[in-house]
Image 1: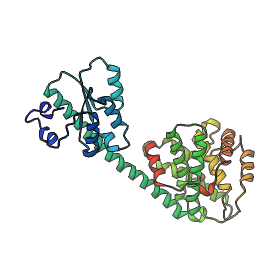
Image 2: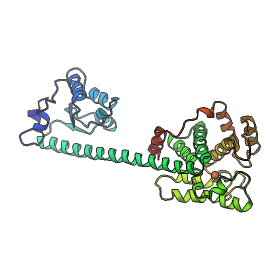
Image 3: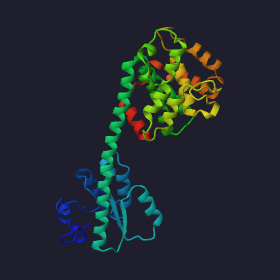
Image 4: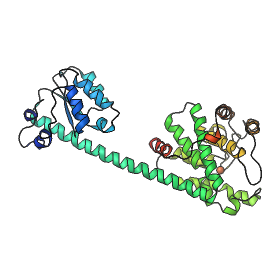
Length: 337
Ligand SMILES: [Fe+2]
């Protein structure tokens, strides 16, 4: 395609594009050039010798190279009767579809609009990356604070999150919901930052007065997350992870399915990990004993279906190999949020 034919004098794009020799005689050459030079924009003829414009675009749109995938492509074509295909290509990410004949001004207007949109998308991408980094840092800071205050609760939260994710997946829940449940597992006890250490780390059973103070952690946690966007599921888990299936829990005495599934999952995972961990006032229970206790409390404290799903997951679960709080995991959480 001849650049001088497409871009008249004073178009504003003539030197920028043509001086870089970005023209290509066919699709294969165009792909090679795109991979070498990463142009700001690609104008593509639909009908070309060798591979078609459509094939070139699909190769770019499905490339492993993110920069190529993001390059805006404008298809130029004489075919005017293929609306279905046009829609298909636009859905695949094609920036614009321009049917011949068109004038220079029309083409330049399309190019202007596509480049402006591309710049806005790039800016959004940068903002998204900054927002992701900020989210990851905030969650890490919260868990670090909790670990400093009470190392057991920090580790226990990571284990609970890992187990809750496995159980959530066994319910075939959407990935976004699974990630929220996992984040709920991670942050469920975050309110313990507000509980005095003499109670939080007491090497023995708590007095009735101390229990009242300890129970405040569900409110502290919920309040800490108030106003954080897209955290409704997580806040519900934080607030209600001590509710019981039979209504005997706190803070609101919710029962059965009034408690969200995500919360019921975290509640069971939380109890299992607590039972199988060493505490100052008792040794850890074996997996078999912990399962026995979970089953004994199914229908009372726990959702019986969740208990059975958790027991199924435990048959292939090795707590020793549970992942730690990885950057990748937190980034996935941010995408889901
Ligand atoms: Fe708790």
